[in-house]
Length: 491
Image (cartoon, rainbow, N blue to C red; front, side, top):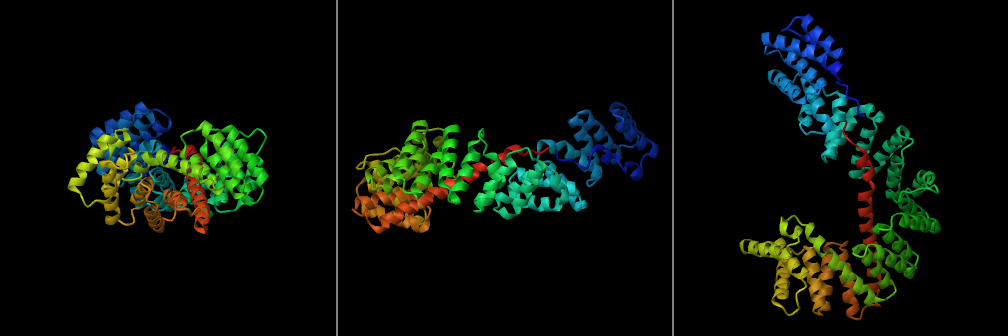
């Protein structure tokens, strides 16, 4: 637990020396009563003194401390507020309010801590507390500055070390995060997660041998954490120990058979070692468990493409597109509540209405085309033509809107216009080289134009596989640091 130096004893320390409005004996007596846990008697004395001197901010602060220790937060807050109205920068009152807000990560503690630091820039505890709150609310840049100002004390607080390390990782300052995890391992030698998270960073920065040294002691026969096994598998594969990597990954799949990323990792190893059918077999096993997981179909499609089984690859890529169509809208900052409520007809009506007022909005044209194509209209239908028109307008208004080019490529392929689809895919990949949708559309389109054996196709299939791995790695990294986030708490 983060120890707050502004404990009650420090809150009241020094009040008597600074007391100008009340006799020293009154303040000393109240302090003594608080230390002796005689809070009711202390409150009685503060009320008597305040009756005589209602503007005594020090007495209001003592009353706030007594109420706080009794567990009466509302009355404590009222007392501290009155003290701060009378003396806005009075440190004990500021600290008293912080003590009320901080345990629940109440944002009202932030400006109070800032005022404390402004009057005393060397207050390391205030810096540390503010850093924890900044991290909690997603401001890692500010948090790191305050962690640095917090000094060495952070090194003995596991929660603070975790939060500091998380922010460094979040900002990809991996080298600075490593020693923090090493300290955390020393503080929590019986805990697994600091070792795991250090290994994550080492794998991320391609220090795989070092990661294996950290992970090996965790790879016991009774290890039940599939994430540890999967991470170790990645490290062993990176150093060339494929048998060990495969064995660990199989063990992870047995422990967590509904985790798609493990099957995808297995497929990637299979692809790397030209064991395409082995990878397909494993993906098939995964699809029995999670039949609507798009990443599995994409992995299998890539494996089929490597075997030149382009009919099967195309079928899988089409399923990917169907499964991901609903998710693709969510990546755009448009308030379409009806989409989230599975009411696409109402969403379509609203976008159509918005287009009347904003005909020059590329994003609205894109969304309109997306909503229509999600309904799979017939190629000769009015709706299909409307979608095509809106997608064309979208790319005319915003040529780098790759989502609209992806829609155009899909529509051109549906209507057999593969050369036009190829053109859209290449334009999309020019603006967004990591656009997986454009890449697998291009694979299909090239195949239909009898270019399945071309050098471009071979390069493209390999590149699509790399894109898929990069996408998987980003998602895996995002999930991995959950241990820090879950274990950390503001206390």
